Amino acid sequence: MSKIGLIIEREYMTRVKKKSFLLLTFLTPFLLLALVAVPLALSSVKSSEVKVIAVSDSEGLYQKRLENSDQYSFVPAQKDMAAVRKQITQDGSVYAYLVIKGDLSKDSSSVNIYTVKQAEMEMKDFISGQLKELARKDKIASYKIEGLDKIIEDSNPKLSLNTIKWDKDGGEKESSSELAMIIGLIATFVIYIFIFAYGAMVMNGVIEEKINRIVEVIVSSVKPFDLMMGKIIGIAMVGLTQVLLWVLLIGGAIGVTTYVLKDKVSDDQMKKVSTEMVQSQTVTNPGLQAGPMKQLSEQTSEVPDVQKILQMISNMNLGEIVFWFVLYFLGGYLLYASLFAAFGSAIDNQEDSQQFVLPLTIPVLFALYAGMYSAQNPDGPLAFWCSLFPLTSPIVMMVRIPFGVPLWQLLVSYGLLVITFLLVVKMAAKIYRTGILMYGKKVTYKELLKWLRYKN
Image 1 (cartoon, one colour):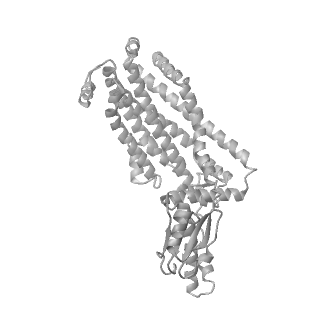
Image 2 (spheres, rainbow, N blue to C red):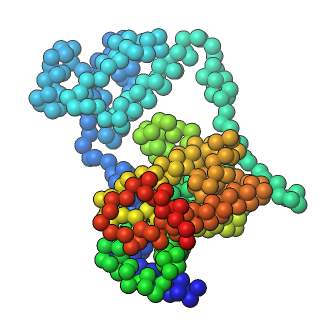
Image 3 (cartoon, rainbow, N blue to C red):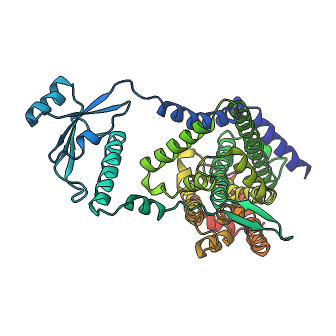
């Protein structure tokens, strides 16, 4: 056991002292925040150029009712279409040509826009939004019913469905299904990324030591099984250290930012930012119109009240989530890292690793997609069975835990994971013991099965 401890210490200290580890650990949280903050800041910077849109309105219903903005200005178009085309293609005095051929309340397809370049989505949404609202008003007015517009507006109230959880003592706590989904998906992605990243690190470390013939010296005083487990556990500790530091750094950065801006940003500015974020989300990806971020915004009175969201987070089972996250993080990593180590011991170079990485990639990718689809229905058949199957449970179960999972399911799931890990370690140790000192032979799956039948 002391030899395994020495190997763990060597693997851990060697990696955490590297400049690459320090740079990646301390810079990654700020890079992630920059990826969110910089595009948001740049998106608020508008061009000073006002783009002129010439409007041809055959019925005269819309041209005078269209409202200009800081970026777009509507002007009547010349009757000669060739002259308008010249203004766009040669003079550059007009940016686009909007042609409305009839009454949009009767024929919504009778409108076209002509440009030299592909029309940008922002301009298209700006024009279509105004025309749609004008056509709606005209359609309502055509019924000649007094107060119909008000009746329609009152008949479509905004509904905010609050979710309240009862505890065992009958107390009530406000919760958020969208927030639980977000936390579950984040935990799922973290485990998915680290299984691949640190599993590959184990494989590359084994291959490197084998190529450099360092392993021949090490196994002269350490059993191959101890060497394999020491390497796997040491790198697992590196991963946990990095996750912990990221959580502290990101939490600290968010806390400092919130404290600095809380007195400088008004409620109106927060509402404007919230609206722009939701609009940009639905424009760039219409499939996310009912996504968790929008629903979370609506649930918190349309303005993302930081205090209310923090209160919802505190009402969640954070202790249970963190506890099981660590267990599934370690269980999933140890399971796959054992396989990565075994396959790494069977090959002599990085090029040959692809044939063995693919069978490990398939179940992990399947687990990721199963987890994403299970986020909408965490108690459905897909989520239930994938959270019990050992090769997918570390990833899929983390989607379900924020919503609450019966204890017996957690115990069965993790028990199967531990049993599978012990069986895989036993098989991996046989492959590792044989392959670690084997050179110059291209190993096949048939050869690996033969090694598994060798007696200790």
